[in-house]
Image (cartoon, rainbow, N blue to C red):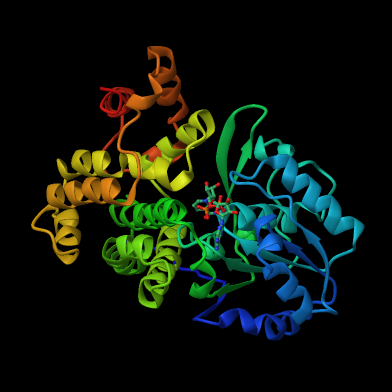
Length: 374
Ligand code: NAD
Protein backbone atom coordinates (compact mmCIF):
# COMPACT_ATOMS: atom_id res chain seq x y z
CA UNK A 1 0.00 0.00 0.00
CA UNK A 2 1.48 3.36 -1.07
CA UNK A 3 0.41 6.46 0.75
CA UNK A 4 1.33 10.06 1.49
CA UNK A 5 0.76 12.13 4.61
CA UNK A 6 0.91 15.89 5.00
CA UNK A 7 -0.63 18.25 7.53
CA UNK A 8 0.98 21.67 7.12
CA UNK A 9 -1.31 23.65 9.44
CA UNK A 10 0.21 24.90 12.71
CA UNK A 11 -2.55 23.88 15.17
CA UNK A 12 -3.24 25.41 18.61
CA UNK A 13 -6.10 23.75 20.52
CA UNK A 14 -7.63 24.43 23.91
CA UNK A 15 -10.09 26.39 26.01
CA UNK A 16 -9.15 30.07 26.03
CA UNK A 17 -6.71 29.56 23.14
CA UNK A 18 -8.11 32.64 21.35
CA UNK A 19 -5.85 34.66 23.65
CA UNK A 20 -2.81 33.45 21.69
CA UNK A 21 -3.86 35.35 18.55
CA UNK A 22 -1.45 38.31 19.07
CA UNK A 23 1.45 35.88 19.46
CA UNK A 24 0.45 34.01 16.28
CA UNK A 25 0.17 37.25 14.31
CA UNK A 26 3.66 38.12 15.49
CA UNK A 27 4.89 34.66 14.44
CA UNK A 28 3.82 35.21 10.82
CA UNK A 29 5.11 38.80 10.85
CA UNK A 30 1.63 40.20 10.20
CA UNK A 31 1.40 44.00 10.04
CA UNK A 32 -1.89 44.83 8.28
CA UNK A 33 -4.54 42.16 8.82
CA UNK A 34 -8.12 41.78 7.64
CA UNK A 35 -10.61 40.04 9.93
CA UNK A 36 -13.09 38.02 7.84
CA UNK A 37 -16.26 37.13 9.71
CA UNK A 38 -20.05 37.30 9.68
CA UNK A 39 -22.28 39.99 11.18
CA UNK A 40 -23.27 37.89 14.21
CA UNK A 41 -19.73 38.20 15.60
CA UNK A 42 -19.97 41.99 15.45
CA UNK A 43 -23.28 41.75 17.31
CA UNK A 44 -21.94 39.41 20.03
CA UNK A 45 -18.87 41.55 20.70
CA UNK A 46 -16.20 39.07 19.61
CA UNK A 47 -14.99 41.29 16.77
CA UNK A 48 -14.60 44.21 19.18
CA UNK A 49 -12.59 41.99 21.53
CA UNK A 50 -10.19 40.99 18.73
CA UNK A 51 -9.84 44.60 17.54
CA UNK A 52 -9.15 45.74 21.13
CA UNK A 53 -6.57 42.98 21.66
CA UNK A 54 -4.85 43.57 18.30
CA UNK A 55 -5.16 47.34 17.75
CA UNK A 56 -2.08 47.73 15.58
CA UNK A 57 -2.28 44.58 13.47
CA UNK A 58 -5.96 44.19 12.49
CA UNK A 59 -6.73 47.14 10.25
CA UNK A 60 -10.03 46.25 8.63
CA UNK A 61 -13.03 43.90 8.94
CA UNK A 62 -15.00 42.13 6.21
CA UNK A 63 -18.24 40.91 7.79
CA UNK A 64 -20.30 40.11 4.70
CA UNK A 65 -20.01 36.31 4.75
CA UNK A 66 -23.30 34.38 4.76
CA UNK A 67 -23.94 30.65 5.20
CA UNK A 68 -23.05 28.75 1.99
CA UNK A 69 -20.56 31.46 0.97
CA UNK A 70 -21.29 32.92 -2.43
CA UNK A 71 -18.48 33.47 -4.92
CA UNK A 72 -19.37 37.19 -5.05
CA UNK A 73 -18.61 37.44 -1.31
CA UNK A 74 -15.12 36.07 -2.02
CA UNK A 75 -14.75 38.75 -4.72
CA UNK A 76 -15.82 41.52 -2.30
CA UNK A 77 -13.44 40.21 0.38
CA UNK A 78 -10.53 39.94 -2.11
CA UNK A 79 -11.20 43.50 -3.32
CA UNK A 80 -11.09 44.78 0.26
CA UNK A 81 -7.81 42.96 0.92
CA UNK A 82 -6.25 44.58 -2.15
CA UNK A 83 -7.68 48.04 -1.39
CA UNK A 84 -6.45 47.99 2.22
CA UNK A 85 -3.13 46.41 1.19
CA UNK A 86 -3.46 43.71 3.82
CA UNK A 87 -0.62 41.26 4.33
CA UNK A 88 -2.48 38.54 6.26
CA UNK A 89 -6.00 37.24 6.83
CA UNK A 90 -7.85 36.08 9.96
CA UNK A 91 -11.05 34.02 9.61
CA UNK A 92 -13.38 34.02 12.62
CA UNK A 93 -16.52 31.95 12.11
CA UNK A 94 -17.94 28.69 10.88
CA UNK A 95 -16.98 26.82 7.74
CA UNK A 96 -18.64 29.43 5.52
CA UNK A 97 -16.42 32.21 6.88
CA UNK A 98 -13.25 30.12 6.81
CA UNK A 99 -13.93 29.00 3.23
CA UNK A 100 -14.55 32.57 2.08
CA UNK A 101 -11.30 33.67 3.76
CA UNK A 102 -9.36 30.75 2.22
CA UNK A 103 -10.53 31.71 -1.27
CA UNK A 104 -9.96 35.43 -0.74
CA UNK A 105 -6.47 34.92 0.77
CA UNK A 106 -5.47 33.11 -2.44
CA UNK A 107 -7.49 34.89 -5.11
CA UNK A 108 -6.66 38.42 -3.88
CA UNK A 109 -3.15 38.10 -5.31
CA UNK A 110 -4.67 38.34 -8.80
CA UNK A 111 -7.62 40.32 -10.15
CA UNK A 112 -9.47 37.39 -11.73
CA UNK A 113 -12.99 36.88 -10.36
CA UNK A 114 -13.67 33.85 -8.15
CA UNK A 115 -15.98 32.52 -10.89
CA UNK A 116 -12.96 31.94 -13.14
CA UNK A 117 -11.50 29.52 -10.57
CA UNK A 118 -14.88 28.07 -9.59
CA UNK A 119 -15.71 27.19 -13.19
CA UNK A 120 -12.25 25.71 -13.72
CA UNK A 121 -11.36 28.24 -16.43
CA UNK A 122 -7.96 28.91 -14.84
CA UNK A 123 -5.78 26.76 -12.63
CA UNK A 124 -5.85 27.37 -8.89
CA UNK A 125 -3.08 29.59 -7.51
CA UNK A 126 -0.14 28.28 -5.53
CA UNK A 127 0.48 31.37 -3.41
CA UNK A 128 -1.71 33.02 -0.78
CA UNK A 129 -1.53 35.52 2.06
CA UNK A 130 -0.92 33.88 5.46
CA UNK A 131 -4.24 32.80 6.94
CA UNK A 132 -5.15 32.27 10.60
CA UNK A 133 -8.37 30.23 10.89
CA UNK A 134 -10.43 30.41 14.09
CA UNK A 135 -13.46 28.10 13.89
CA UNK A 136 -16.59 28.92 15.90
CA UNK A 137 -18.51 25.77 14.91
CA UNK A 138 -17.47 22.15 15.48
CA UNK A 139 -18.12 20.38 12.22
CA UNK A 140 -16.36 21.27 8.99
CA UNK A 141 -12.73 20.90 10.07
CA UNK A 142 -12.04 23.55 7.42
CA UNK A 143 -9.30 24.97 9.67
CA UNK A 144 -7.10 21.98 8.73
CA UNK A 145 -8.28 21.08 5.21
CA UNK A 146 -7.11 21.91 1.71
CA UNK A 147 -10.70 22.47 0.66
CA UNK A 148 -12.90 25.51 0.20
CA UNK A 149 -16.58 24.92 -0.55
CA UNK A 150 -18.17 27.78 -2.44
CA UNK A 151 -21.54 28.44 -4.00
CA UNK A 152 -22.64 30.25 -7.13
CA UNK A 153 -26.20 31.11 -6.10
CA UNK A 154 -26.95 32.62 -9.53
CA UNK A 155 -26.28 29.26 -11.18
CA UNK A 156 -27.49 27.12 -8.25
CA UNK A 157 -24.15 25.28 -8.04
CA UNK A 158 -22.25 24.42 -4.88
CA UNK A 159 -18.89 22.67 -5.15
CA UNK A 160 -15.56 22.21 -3.37
CA UNK A 161 -12.24 23.48 -4.72
CA UNK A 162 -9.23 21.50 -3.51
CA UNK A 163 -5.58 22.56 -3.54
CA UNK A 164 -2.70 22.86 -1.05
CA UNK A 165 -3.06 26.66 -1.24
CA UNK A 166 -6.28 26.36 0.79
CA UNK A 167 -4.58 24.94 3.89
CA UNK A 168 -4.67 27.72 6.50
CA UNK A 169 -1.27 28.73 7.87
CA UNK A 170 -2.37 28.55 11.51
CA UNK A 171 -5.50 27.16 13.21
CA UNK A 172 -6.57 28.41 16.62
CA UNK A 173 -9.26 26.03 17.91
CA UNK A 174 -10.90 27.31 21.09
CA UNK A 175 -13.89 25.12 22.07
CA UNK A 176 -15.28 27.92 24.26
CA UNK A 177 -16.16 29.81 21.06
CA UNK A 178 -18.78 27.14 20.31
CA UNK A 179 -20.76 27.60 23.56
CA UNK A 180 -23.07 30.15 21.88
CA UNK A 181 -24.08 27.78 19.06
CA UNK A 182 -27.82 27.10 19.14
CA UNK A 183 -28.93 23.46 19.40
CA UNK A 184 -29.91 23.08 15.75
CA UNK A 185 -26.58 24.45 14.43
CA UNK A 186 -24.70 22.28 16.94
CA UNK A 187 -26.62 19.28 15.58
CA UNK A 188 -26.04 20.12 11.90
CA UNK A 189 -22.35 20.90 12.28
CA UNK A 190 -21.66 17.93 14.55
CA UNK A 191 -23.34 15.60 12.06
CA UNK A 192 -20.99 16.98 9.39
CA UNK A 193 -17.99 15.98 11.55
CA UNK A 194 -19.40 12.49 12.10
CA UNK A 195 -19.89 12.09 8.33
CA UNK A 196 -16.34 13.29 7.57
CA UNK A 197 -14.96 10.69 9.96
CA UNK A 198 -17.03 7.79 8.60
CA UNK A 199 -16.50 8.77 4.95
CA UNK A 200 -12.74 9.08 5.46
CA UNK A 201 -12.73 5.65 7.10
CA UNK A 202 -14.65 3.75 4.39
CA UNK A 203 -12.95 5.75 1.62
CA UNK A 204 -11.09 3.91 -1.15
CA UNK A 205 -8.18 6.33 -0.53
CA UNK A 206 -7.89 5.53 3.18
CA UNK A 207 -4.48 4.80 4.70
CA UNK A 208 -3.14 4.14 8.21
CA UNK A 209 -2.94 7.82 9.22
CA UNK A 210 -6.37 8.76 7.88
CA UNK A 211 -7.80 5.65 9.55
CA UNK A 212 -6.34 6.65 12.91
CA UNK A 213 -7.83 10.17 12.74
CA UNK A 214 -11.16 8.87 11.39
CA UNK A 215 -11.51 6.20 14.08
CA UNK A 216 -10.80 8.73 16.81
CA UNK A 217 -13.18 11.34 15.39
CA UNK A 218 -16.08 8.94 14.75
CA UNK A 219 -15.93 7.68 18.30
CA UNK A 220 -15.90 11.17 19.79
CA UNK A 221 -18.70 12.51 17.58
CA UNK A 222 -21.07 9.62 18.20
CA UNK A 223 -20.39 9.85 21.93
CA UNK A 224 -20.60 13.63 22.53
CA UNK A 225 -22.84 15.18 19.84
CA UNK A 226 -26.10 14.71 21.72
CA UNK A 227 -24.65 16.10 24.95
CA UNK A 228 -23.30 19.16 23.10
CA UNK A 229 -26.80 19.76 21.69
CA UNK A 230 -28.61 19.54 25.02
CA UNK A 231 -25.91 20.96 27.34
CA UNK A 232 -24.47 23.83 25.30
CA UNK A 233 -22.06 24.89 28.04
CA UNK A 234 -20.79 21.42 28.83
CA UNK A 235 -17.03 21.97 28.68
CA UNK A 236 -16.35 18.31 28.03
CA UNK A 237 -18.94 17.90 25.24
CA UNK A 238 -17.88 21.10 23.47
CA UNK A 239 -14.19 20.25 23.74
CA UNK A 240 -14.69 16.71 22.49
CA UNK A 241 -16.83 17.88 19.54
CA UNK A 242 -14.16 20.47 18.60
CA UNK A 243 -11.60 17.66 18.76
CA UNK A 244 -13.85 15.40 16.67
CA UNK A 245 -14.28 18.10 14.04
CA UNK A 246 -10.55 18.83 13.88
CA UNK A 247 -9.46 15.19 13.64
CA UNK A 248 -12.23 14.33 11.17
CA UNK A 249 -10.97 17.25 9.04
CA UNK A 250 -7.43 15.88 9.27
CA UNK A 251 -8.76 12.52 8.09
CA UNK A 252 -10.91 13.56 5.14
CA UNK A 253 -8.47 16.12 3.79
CA UNK A 254 -6.21 13.10 3.16
CA UNK A 255 -8.85 10.88 1.55
CA UNK A 256 -11.57 13.11 0.15
CA UNK A 257 -15.23 12.49 0.92
CA UNK A 258 -17.66 10.02 -0.69
CA UNK A 259 -21.31 9.48 -1.61
CA UNK A 260 -22.73 11.31 1.42
CA UNK A 261 -20.99 14.56 0.52
CA UNK A 262 -21.72 14.05 -3.20
CA UNK A 263 -25.43 14.16 -2.32
CA UNK A 264 -25.04 17.04 0.13
CA UNK A 265 -24.08 19.48 -2.65
CA UNK A 266 -27.38 19.40 -4.62
CA UNK A 267 -29.34 19.11 -1.35
CA UNK A 268 -27.67 22.31 -0.15
CA UNK A 269 -27.86 24.13 -3.49
CA UNK A 270 -31.42 23.13 -4.56
CA UNK A 271 -33.18 22.83 -1.22
CA UNK A 272 -31.07 25.30 0.79
CA UNK A 273 -30.46 22.72 3.54
CA UNK A 274 -27.70 23.36 6.08
CA UNK A 275 -24.68 21.34 4.97
CA UNK A 276 -24.48 19.03 8.00
CA UNK A 277 -28.20 18.23 7.92
CA UNK A 278 -27.89 17.40 4.21
CA UNK A 279 -25.02 15.00 5.02
CA UNK A 280 -27.02 13.45 7.85
CA UNK A 281 -29.88 12.65 5.46
CA UNK A 282 -27.87 9.99 3.64
CA UNK A 283 -25.11 8.78 6.03
CA UNK A 284 -27.18 5.95 7.55
CA UNK A 285 -28.59 4.99 4.14
CA UNK A 286 -25.15 4.74 2.50
CA UNK A 287 -23.82 2.93 5.57
CA UNK A 288 -26.32 0.14 4.96
CA UNK A 289 -25.42 0.07 1.25
CA UNK A 290 -21.67 -0.04 1.96
CA UNK A 291 -22.11 -2.71 4.64
CA UNK A 292 -23.28 -5.14 1.96
CA UNK A 293 -19.76 -5.21 0.48
CA UNK A 294 -17.74 -5.09 3.70
CA UNK A 295 -15.80 -8.20 2.68
CA UNK A 296 -12.67 -7.39 4.68
CA UNK A 297 -14.67 -6.45 7.79
CA UNK A 298 -13.31 -2.89 7.98
CA UNK A 299 -16.71 -1.36 8.62
CA UNK A 300 -17.51 -4.01 11.19
CA UNK A 301 -14.32 -3.12 13.07
CA UNK A 302 -15.39 0.54 13.12
CA UNK A 303 -18.85 -0.46 14.33
CA UNK A 304 -17.36 -2.55 17.16
CA UNK A 305 -14.96 0.26 18.13
CA UNK A 306 -17.93 2.61 18.29
CA UNK A 307 -19.63 0.22 20.72
CA UNK A 308 -22.12 -1.48 18.37
CA UNK A 309 -22.54 -5.11 17.38
CA UNK A 310 -22.50 -4.50 13.61
CA UNK A 311 -22.75 -1.84 10.91
CA UNK A 312 -26.56 -2.02 10.70
CA UNK A 313 -26.71 -1.21 14.41
CA UNK A 314 -24.52 1.91 13.95
CA UNK A 315 -26.68 3.04 11.01
CA UNK A 316 -29.84 2.59 13.11
CA UNK A 317 -28.23 4.42 16.03
CA UNK A 318 -27.41 7.37 13.73
CA UNK A 319 -31.01 7.43 12.47
CA UNK A 320 -32.25 7.56 16.08
CA UNK A 321 -29.67 10.21 16.97
CA UNK A 322 -31.00 12.40 14.14
CA UNK A 323 -34.52 12.20 15.57
CA UNK A 324 -33.35 13.02 19.09
CA UNK A 325 -31.27 16.06 18.09
CA UNK A 326 -33.86 17.42 15.67
CA UNK A 327 -32.36 16.66 12.25
CA UNK A 328 -34.48 15.59 9.29
CA UNK A 329 -34.43 12.00 8.15
CA UNK A 330 -36.53 12.43 5.00
CA UNK A 331 -37.81 14.99 2.51
CA UNK A 332 -41.54 14.14 2.64
CA UNK A 333 -42.45 17.66 3.83
CA UNK A 334 -41.25 19.12 0.49
CA UNK A 335 -43.55 17.12 -1.84
CA UNK A 336 -40.75 16.84 -4.40
CA UNK A 337 -41.75 16.15 -8.00
CA UNK A 338 -40.18 13.34 -10.05
CA UNK A 339 -38.33 16.06 -11.97
CA UNK A 340 -36.80 17.45 -8.76
CA UNK A 341 -35.73 13.98 -7.64
CA UNK A 342 -34.07 13.49 -11.01
CA UNK A 343 -32.29 16.84 -10.59
CA UNK A 344 -30.99 15.68 -7.20
CA UNK A 345 -29.79 12.43 -8.77
CA UNK A 346 -27.97 14.23 -11.57
CA UNK A 347 -26.61 16.89 -9.20
CA UNK A 348 -25.06 14.14 -7.06
CA UNK A 349 -22.83 12.90 -9.91
CA UNK A 350 -19.73 14.27 -8.24
CA UNK A 351 -16.21 12.82 -8.71
CA UNK A 352 -16.06 11.91 -5.00
CA UNK A 353 -18.58 9.10 -5.68
CA UNK A 354 -15.52 7.23 -6.96
CA UNK A 355 -14.11 7.23 -3.42
CA UNK A 356 -17.07 5.25 -2.12
CA UNK A 357 -16.14 1.64 -1.30
CA UNK A 358 -18.94 0.26 -3.48
CA UNK A 359 -19.85 1.66 -6.91
CA UNK A 360 -22.72 4.14 -6.68
CA UNK A 361 -24.82 4.06 -9.85
CA UNK A 362 -27.56 6.43 -10.94
CA UNK A 363 -30.06 3.79 -9.86
CA UNK A 364 -28.51 3.62 -6.38
CA UNK A 365 -28.82 7.40 -6.05
CA UNK A 366 -32.40 7.28 -7.33
CA UNK A 367 -33.39 4.67 -4.77
CA UNK A 368 -31.66 6.60 -1.95
CA UNK A 369 -33.60 9.77 -2.86
CA UNK A 370 -36.85 7.81 -3.38
CA UNK A 371 -36.47 6.34 0.13
CA UNK A 372 -36.64 9.91 1.46
CA UNK A 373 -39.92 10.88 -0.15
CA UNK A 374 -42.20 7.98 0.78
P1 NAD B 1 -21.73 28.09 8.83
O1 NAD B 1 -20.37 28.63 8.83
O2 NAD B 1 -22.51 28.22 7.55
O3 NAD B 1 -22.52 28.74 10.03
C1 NAD B 1 -23.88 28.40 10.26
C2 NAD B 1 -24.52 29.50 11.12
O4 NAD B 1 -23.98 29.44 12.42
C3 NAD B 1 -24.28 30.91 10.61
O5 NAD B 1 -25.48 31.63 10.68
C4 NAD B 1 -23.24 31.46 11.58
O6 NAD B 1 -23.32 32.86 11.71
C5 NAD B 1 -23.63 30.74 12.86
N1 NAD B 1 -22.55 30.60 13.84
C6 NAD B 1 -21.29 30.18 13.60
N2 NAD B 1 -20.61 30.10 14.76
C7 NAD B 1 -21.46 30.47 15.75
C8 NAD B 1 -21.34 30.57 17.18
N3 NAD B 1 -20.24 30.25 17.82
N4 NAD B 1 -22.41 30.96 17.88
C9 NAD B 1 -23.60 31.25 17.24
N5 NAD B 1 -23.78 31.19 15.91
C10 NAD B 1 -22.71 30.78 15.17
O7 NAD B 1 -21.76 26.55 9.26
P2 NAD B 1 -20.63 25.43 9.15
O8 NAD B 1 -21.36 24.15 9.20
O9 NAD B 1 -19.54 25.67 10.09
O10 NAD B 1 -20.05 25.60 7.68
C11 NAD B 1 -20.76 25.12 6.57
C12 NAD B 1 -20.02 25.45 5.29
O11 NAD B 1 -18.72 24.84 5.31
C13 NAD B 1 -20.75 24.86 4.10
O12 NAD B 1 -20.66 25.73 3.00
C14 NAD B 1 -19.98 23.58 3.84
O13 NAD B 1 -20.15 23.12 2.52
C15 NAD B 1 -18.59 24.02 4.15
N6 NAD B 1 -17.64 22.93 4.46
C16 NAD B 1 -16.33 23.17 4.22
C17 NAD B 1 -15.38 22.20 4.47
C18 NAD B 1 -13.95 22.45 4.17
O14 NAD B 1 -13.10 21.58 4.39
N7 NAD B 1 -13.59 23.61 3.68
C19 NAD B 1 -15.76 20.96 5.01
C20 NAD B 1 -17.11 20.75 5.26
C21 NAD B 1 -18.04 21.75 5.01
